Length: 283
Image (tube, rainbow, N blue to C red; front, top):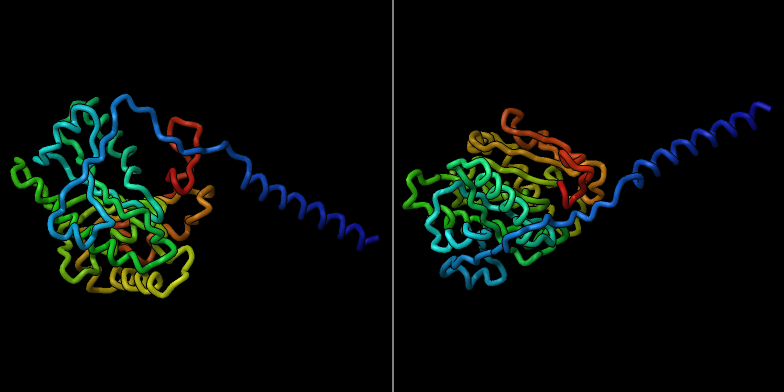
């Protein structure tokens, strides 16, 4: 009698656990991550980057604008705070729209004098999460873009000396990879915000280039020399929660990579004042 009873209890327990796992993974609202409504047409104004454009013909640098603001920035005589968005694996440069538009509307609504100028790199929607051979080239291009961006503020009343970087997914790795370039000035970047970026290691490692890029970047950030050169850099990393099935939260943490006093790691599970949960795209 004991054996059938143990078997029955085991089946019940396994069934409950299986149902709980199924409910956790499937019991949520559909999240299409649709773009918000706009009453002004978004513009991604391409910027001439000079002679290097021939070398990086598949890449481009844009500045985001809409409405009257888009007309105002055409001369590229800027006086705001520069922000550069780096898309990730197969990411589009048009992803910057939600960040750029919200930042613009908040500045206009609150009537503040400080505003952000959002730039974005178009890296041809390359599969940087699967093939590491493109990461070094993307990093070098972003470096050139940072220099170009700061040149637009020479006539500003208070010209900035650094650029805020926002990286989605693999774009966050490219942002940290900048500091490994031999001719990169670390003072150009003091704030990096990453969204669903696998900092610890690649989600999948199909080739040596991807592995070696990660190894080089993380070794530098963990080294004593890197820690000294990066003392002024703050890194914020947010993960997409349990619904991000592409990059699990553990990979987005900065433990052991960035010093605790300069690192913030968080998991975003929902969007405030809405009924929408987050995933890899909405992180």
